[in-house]
Length: 466
Image (tube, rainbow, N blue to C red; front, side):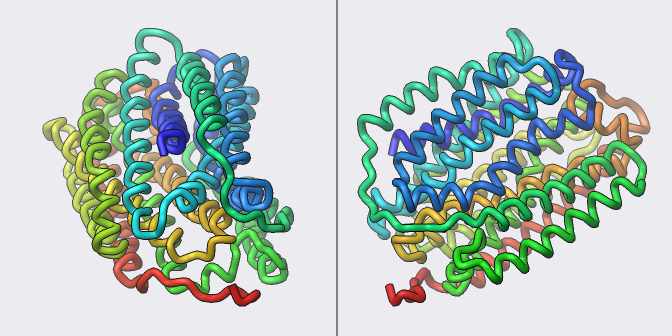
């Protein structure tokens, strides 16, 4: 369990620490304001597209073997990111990092399901949530300190010792125990899904930095068309990226949709709050990170207890309550103004971290309890894919909302932390953030409704009668 938690921790560190380093990366490497966002989006996109396919590799060749390979690839990508010399290099090496993260994420859930009986999986996923929260704490804290006092390159160098320790531990204590299953990779589905999501995400990002143009419309239409082709391909594939059998299990579909909407409603929060703190409030990266720190600590403390609660009460109540608490947090964030106390941002972050700590272990446990053992890798990857799709579009939505509130160039400059706002412009921008938070509130309410509607955890026989 400790080795699995380290994998989640290192991915969480990387997810939050890079946000605070974007200004320094943009300045040091001469990356354009629009290109620097792909340091984050590119990473998420790769995890989204590859999670199910790499989960399949775990079913075929062993989940522990693929998990260890994920650490090796992630560490290699981190080292290369640390020595990146231009925009193409940093984005490309972040994509490589994303491949490693996808291997880790797609197989960690399946490993937990093999290690623990169904009655204890909620507690195990609670510890997994603890690893995520601790990683987020370290990412926020170390990001502020390293970017302010050392160099942004060290946010990637620190992954080297952590990854090496995790590889050594994994080699000693983790061993494949589950059955091996022959799988076919769905390359046409993965390619069309990846290109489709890329086209839509590219169009949304470009809209935040330039007026509507034929090029932007072309990317958007092309992306949507490829997603339509992806759906047609999936209907004809023997083993599709979106395993249609899993959607016949009553618990799985609402749980996956809840994961997608929770990612859509919550992932942008960190970016919006950082924009608010560094823009209208003029805080430095280190001050902004310290203000957010208590919420992550509280979320880390809640995680293990939330997992036990899911084991006792089942997944529906803890997951739905967690989403309802997240709704309250988003309403708190919406009250932030240019003159309100900074404690509102700290309070909102604490509340949303509590909500997430309740949701993650319960929702993961619901999916992994319901699927047949031979499909654990696919289900783990699919859960990660749905959550990542929500995260990708949460991120691009945050940029679009900011760009609609104030001039596009200024919004991007605030986003990467290269400028602050004052006077009337600050007020307009903060009002726009309030609208964004209310929009995300609606998304989170829908996620809570889906979570409440899911059936009891149950499995059904697959086509082979198992």
